[in-house]
Image (cartoon, rainbow, N blue to C red):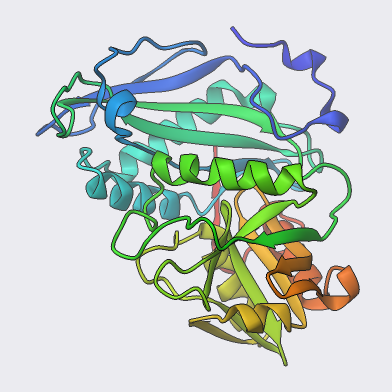
Length: 342
């Protein structure tokens, strides 16, 4: 039945999975539609040893958050984008495509049943993890014939502990996160398993995360572990274009829109050279978990590069404040990004 929410120390939340009251569960066979599901107690699940996910990694997931806002409401942030990306990811991995209404209704049911686990305003958020696996048994290399969809939630604090400290990134030439024409643009579970070892090595030697290069041209940068990367130079904001190997992040899209429409900054989705990153005025990464997090140092084969004296830049701070302000309803949501959970 999960931990008692009354025992949670909201001021000490990290980014860890805490057991809550319930989770949403649905199943679907190949050729059918996702149409039924229900809340079940939070807990373990049973899988066949021959399940598609265990043998061939056939699974995708999403990540979003629910916020307790300054207006004493519970809201989701742009959940339709998560639904659209889930549909794209499932199609790419031969999983029955999920209808947007079904996906969002499942989110709402799960949040409402676990509402006591949403941190108070300003204390964190409820992280929401929708995930779908091939759970039908397979032996040959082929799609499973049955799939399970789960949504579980957990109250969380910051992804990186302590105050917002600019990250120190390690550029890797030994590993690639994904390749063009592969599944880098899908939120597939295999993408993240590939990043575990490079991240382990980087953190073991004092770095916060890994900066990955383009598999076809290592002069170009791609992503930071599980986050998109932005650079600011001469008041032009750049981020790597979506060319098949980069995840189309919800926070990425939001930052691009805020920079253009709210801050009158020129934005470019384009190829970004590693040399440009190392000489940028400001660098930051974006994602549901990291929100907008500054980068203060980058270490590459050419040495260590200090960004903005190792501090959070002015534009980075403004973009983060604006995004968080919308999510918490501290400022007006003129873009209609918030989805109230009644």
